[in-house]
Length: 148
Image 1 (cartoon, helix red, strand yellow):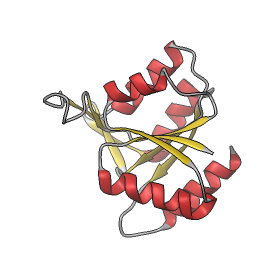
Image 2: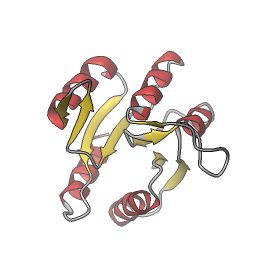
Image 3: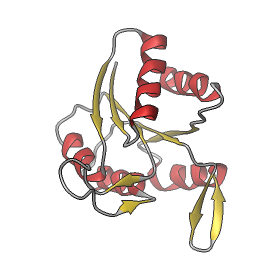
Image 4: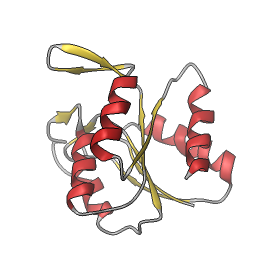
């Protein structure tokens, strides 16, 4: 199995890697920390890579520039880029947020999952809530990967 992890938080990224390695053994990982570096990597990987995507990402890697403006929906920008370039990698979004502000209201993860299924049905596979105080997300991630 091969994974592209698009995540700017090293703690969360390492927890995801540990979970997948524990469940599936020897796997291959490539990592990106920003919208820009993810778009570049997506152009180089095969379609059998599973993309594990954070919703909130900076525009640029912090070590390559100022980091750019944080994008609450950087993950959406990446999904739209994948559609534009007709990439078929399956995407699992892993977010720490329970709700996401859209305009002047908070939208829950169930609604966001539904919206993502409608807009990105060909590539979007699942939305998982990452929680540092609970391991429930781990079994959901393993199940979701197993479905693929």
